[in-house]
Image (cartoon, rainbow over all chains, first blue to last red; front, side, top):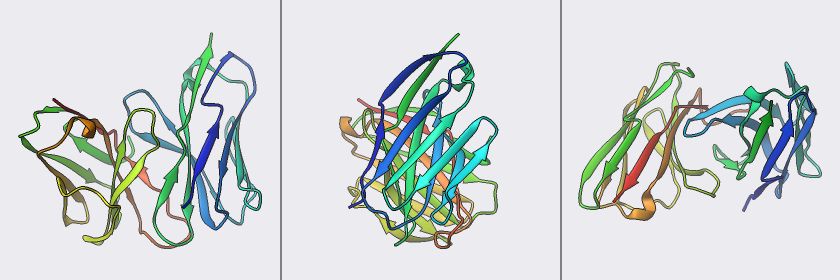
Length: 112
Length: 115
């Protein structure tokens, strides 16, 4: 059974700092990995999708990397802003079907 | 706005009530999903529909009954729920369920409280 772990569970940083969120998964047979953002009480917003054949994806100040063989992904946020405060979720899509398996998320607070 | 809407946004119901959650997607997608998000737990997949046919049922209790009348609408019918069913219920859609590149787009969720 696929398990996804995110470290740290919570992170508080001052504005302007660069930061890294970590995601690990137990079964490397994945189609892709997706990073989401969730604001309190709201739905999920997709940030980046990395296919299993890719090493990284970039969107603005966000960069996600994938090391499929070691079962790890990182989300790098450059020059963090208070508006980045949210919970960041990592999810992997298994090669065997449509299932997305989620981690518990990292709750990020960026202080002005 | 992701193109996926959910109603109601908040719902409080007693254990003997019957209610329904509604999801609608305006993206022309063929697959729709129900997820449950409980406090301090990862999102759990409940049901998957592809072209109005249920393709996955993740061992969900029968007090949750999904319905997909067409590819744009998805319902979750609720009856005789338990307090532990209180959670955020999220709907998602994607172009398909198989294939390499399909992202899932999520609605804002329905916050359900069972009293």
